[in-house]
Image 1: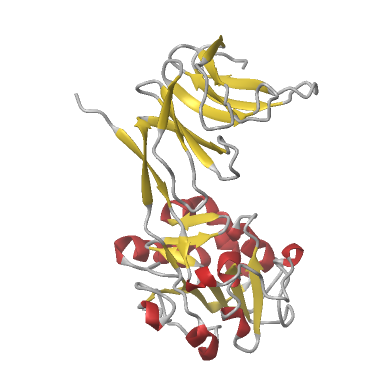
Image 2: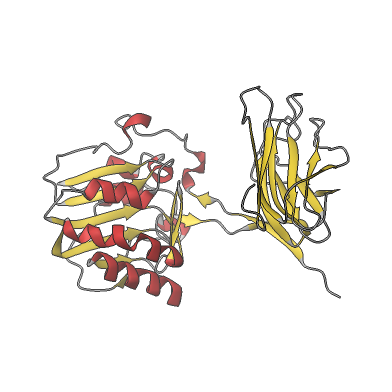
Length: 347
């Protein structure tokens, strides 16, 4: 018999910009992230910049004339923000999106847009054509977006949905010193628009618009769910996974640098399908609760604030629980537990 060992992957983004203080340009307030930085609604070129990229002020210091700039709010869906900005607009000849990238994917502070996501955004993406001219261009600035079959399928479908000619890079985008350039090598049609970023700002930018490689951390076998919390009271975010077989949770303590320690496993009920965290006994320490599909229980593990937990206490619930959440449901300032049961009409 072979056992499956789970791996957690943490994906970050890279910018030379790592040494640059993460501050928005003075013109951009946190409450004004979708306010144009220049020009008016008569602009024919719109530039959308992910907030994580805009944090390095270099690129926004030089934008081509007649370009309206919007910084995307990391707390809101990027596609929806662009869609809302385009509502009621007409005669736009080019859209420019600057974000981190990977083959067949654009990375925003609010999440990653990849090939498999495009169908669910079809209606929004198709609505963009109402704001665009018949020969409009969509320029995607991000590393490797059009690389390989996956990248080309992503850009082609994006072109079909928006009606625009799409251009994207199949290699590193950014500083030449980092191996990058600003050439959009792959195009789905005839590109008529120039770059929205000035040559001076592109030359001054020292980063690359790339997702960093995934970093894998070992967890338990056959993980079914993951949650985060501060389990050892050090102010850093930690990870817990529910492992269906062998009926444990794995607690992985974070160092606050994107790195994590070795997993510690704690026994819970049979076939845990879900996990949630919260202060369940009012001691200001973060506790863990799992929904156990096999034993039809929830397991409560009380934390001691050091990253360790006591033995699980099990409570019976409905048939085949597959989800769990915590909250104060009756206003008594105590944390309660709710589960969803797959074999009952009530939870």
